[in-house]
Length: 309
Image (cartoon, rainbow, N blue to C red; front, side):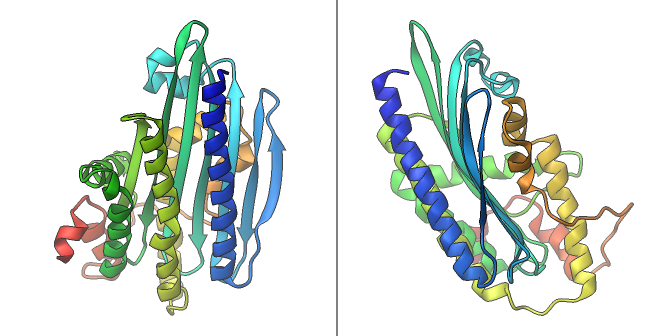
């Protein structure tokens, strides 16, 4: 790896490991009971990571915050299918990825990820890019929470250009769409990939801004919803809707495919799965119910900030 590429990779790694530390610390405080257990791992083909999982906390049924840095002589098939020009290149990939599954159905599940790739080939310029984002999957949505989520996302990326929020918001809506269900996974947020313009400094800055915006976006929702009373029927609906999370991750998610195809640690890759989930044949929500409102209002792309203004 050329020295300049190595320096860039080191900068990103320092940010990502610090971000993992900060997020874990703040989530432990918000939970008030659970603690993350770290599981460091090595990848035989090159690289490794540190997986941190909190289970059976006061707020979180399961929360995983992973850091990984993997490298190898060949880009995995999921990456070259997305970008065929990367075939035959060696690679370094590092990132932080998290998924939080709360106990309370009134507190949404959430996912965030920020990542960096470098692909190299002798005699050719290195190809590098950033990706990332965060999205929200409520079961019993509150519009004020959705508006706060999207306003925080917009505030994070707008200093880099007013075009980024609408572009990355739409990308998120399109990416986290379950085609076989005809619905979005949740209410979206931000999603971006292949970011390398106008240069390393600004691209890295935008990725950092997204990573640092996750806690301000999610922590206020914890404080507002963690103690909301819920019924067993609402808990069962939460478990049913968690099935959509599993369906998306196993059918569509590029990160899951990349991790498995690159020989990453399976337990760490699949820590995104909910600890309990159920499927129900032919489920239909009761007309006029809160469950029906989720389908009718929230599981379709819309401009939440315009609606709230």
